[in-house]
Image (cartoon, rainbow over all chains, first blue to last red; front, side):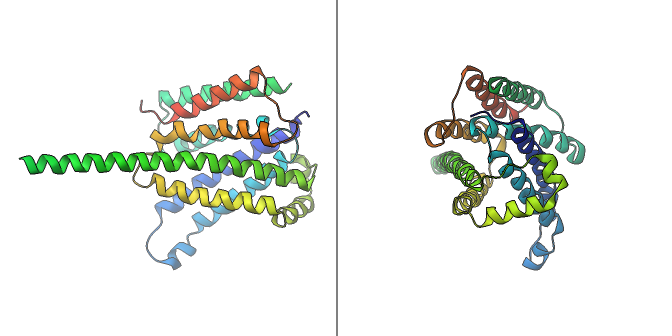
Length: 117
Length: 148
């Protein structure tokens, strides 16, 4: 069983959408205070959860075809977006560890795709 | 003097015990999370949909039909239920702890998913490049949280 490129693209797209979910959840968590009413009207959290749900729809459409041993590791590309958004929106610096870790992740994902060919 | 040093020692033991507890909790979360992934894969395979990204973006009705299939599938229900419990447990374990120090454990999820896939899913196999690739991903995720 081969893993179609369209499945890989769907999983990557899902993890891209999900990375925005994390940004909204973080802002929502920072605004989180006290009462249940405030929690329910915390739109940042709402949008974050909605983006996570949307990303999982794309993920599911992706993994419905092909091999999980190829598709699941593609989720790790989400770390790239998370670190870029953290720099852009929350001024979290790029560290040597982050750059080194990302380089290893990208190399690993490339190897898995190479192994799929 | 003696009593205050005993208090410090007791506090240190408490802290170590708590660190070990979160370590174990996060470790179990990676195994539960990997099992959930297997169920999600089996569930979506049952739906038998062939949708590409451009079809999904161009035809929302296809996506809607897919979603109806998703919410009526038992394996997906259980898989995402486990995923929800997992997220809750993880939040408990991480409370008051630094997430970055637990990255190496969280990265093990990639190993469990690979092993479980080979044993529990049809048509899955490993080869040299995939094995090394997963090693690099686990290593990469592990170092992400390091200071400096």
